[in-house]
Structure formats: C-alpha cells, structure tokens
Length: 383
Image 1 (cartoon, helix red, strand yellow):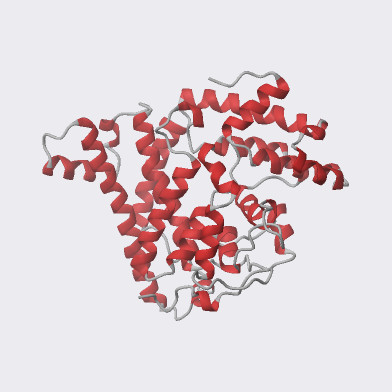
Image 2: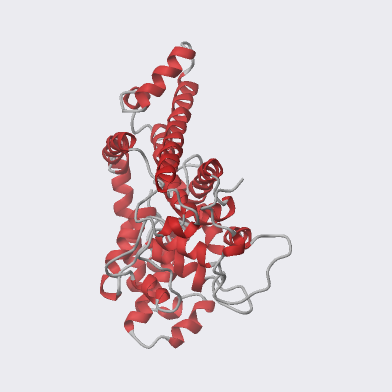
C-alpha cells in the first residue's frame, strides 16, 4: 500500500512533449524502461567505478553499481510505501553522466572545460536524457516525466548558486524547481547510492588486496558485524566470513535509513508528495551516529583504496588520456564520428565546440577512450 506522500503516476506533471499514455505501463515505469534501453545506460557496462574496466572482471563497473543502487532503492522505497518505479528510474539514471575512468575522468574533463562552463556529471546525466539520446522521431532525449527529471537533477538536495551550464540551459526552458528538495523517491535513490558504494568498495578493495579483513574488522559498524559472524559461525572460512560480515554491514545501513525516515515522516506528517518537496529538510538520510561511523570508513577507503599507489598510478595515466583527447578533437573535429559532424557544422563558437567535444568524450567507455587515444595519438593503453 502506497503512502499518501508517495508520487502517483496520475498526479505527474507530465512530459515536455505530449505523448499518448501507455495502456499497460505507468508513466514512471515507462521512464524506467526508456532509461534501461538508452545507449548511455548500456555504456555504463564499460565505465569505471573505482578500478579501470580492464583491471579485472570481478570489480564493479558503473553499470553493476547502478543495478545495486536500484536494488537498495527498491527495498527502501517498498518499506516506506513510496513509488518503486519512480525510485528505480532515478536510481538507474543517476550515473548516466559519468565520464570514462570514473571521478578521475570527470576531474580531468572538468579542468579542461573550465574556460567553457565546466563539467558536472549530474548535469550531464540530465543533458543525456533531454538532448543527447536521439532515437525518437518527435523529440531529442527520452522525454521523461517531470518527476524523473527532477530526481536526476536534484536527488542530492536543492541546487542553489551558480548552476552548471548544462543544468542552467535546460532549466531555462523547463523549470525543475531546483531550489526545493526532490521527491522522497529521488531522495531514496540518492541515499541508496551511498549505501551501495560504501558496501561494494569495501568488497572490491578486499578483492584487490589493498587492505585485509582484519583491518576491516577494526572499523566502526564492521567490528560488530564481524563479531556477530564469529559468534554464530566460529569456524567459517576466510571468504565466507568476510561476505557474511559485509552483508550484515549492508543491512545495518539500509535498516538505519528506513528507521530514520519513518521517524522523520512521522514528525513532519506529509500528506502529499509536494509536502516532501516543501518540507525544507532532507527526510531520507542516515542517523547521526551511523553517518559519523561512515565518515571514518570513508576516510579509511580514501587512504587505503582511492589513493592507493596502484590506483594513483593508473589515475595519472588515464588523466593524460583525457588531457590528450580533448585538444585533439578541438583541433580536428572532422575526426568525430559521422553522426556528430552535423552538430559540428552548426557550432558558432569555440565554447559550443568545446561543449560538443565534452559531450563526445564524456560518453566514451574506458576501452573506447583508450582505443581512440591509441588510434589518433599513438598512445599505448595504460597497464
């Protein structure tokens, strides 16, 4: 049973371009399906989460991360009586704007784009679903509902101050009310991202042997999880022991979010989805105690994983790949694929060309960026 403050398909603000409604799918289900079938979603399969895509078959990619986020989001959404289809749509779309090579690629592209308005992966995700996906006869983008677009744009909270250019450009034609909080469904998608990566980065770090199980067992929350596993299964082998502890850690985070949300919702007593937007507070969040513990875990991951010598070495190599590709395509836009050249012919300034080149590079997978670097610049793939 849905809560009164859940987003309802019948109350949707609709799509920018009018379409006939489906006879068997809600508007939010249709959004989710369009995101799954989008080219940008498929490309997440070969985009970095932490480790470069070719470094191992078992490490998470942006695609597997997005699927895990959607799974967490469905669980929390169901427990709170929210609209699962809208929650899943936002969760699956939240990383569409990521560049190749994860945050390393984003940092490089942001630096290169600083004279041209910068680069922001959340704004790029909105640009993809409203402009860059070009498959439909009557419109560019996916023509998603207002609620899904709102969730993509501001699932992390109100967007204030100077807007990223891609977000400002769209906001000028379609008001997403960026100064308010997003729906509860979008907030669930955002916190599910935190739950997923805090869990799976620990798992991937162990697999990469960047730290040991014993070190994890000393961290907050995890110490209790390992102690409980050891109490129940005193003779469990190494791999099963750490899996059992990490899945309990996963459960602690999800249960904490649900408990805090239930209390917040009881305090605010929203009667509609709009009440959530106008509440002025982040309703879906961790408790203060768990948030403090997660800060310690993130600090551990930053030192031992994100800035591990092997990871830093690879970061330098792939940063150079992006720094080489951008000026190359700025100087040789004729080397862009055929379907991009029509857009090149229509640009009227260096800024517009830079944004076009940024769109192209941001859409690359890890392997395609490396192939382009080798093809056009003679660079060898980093190893």
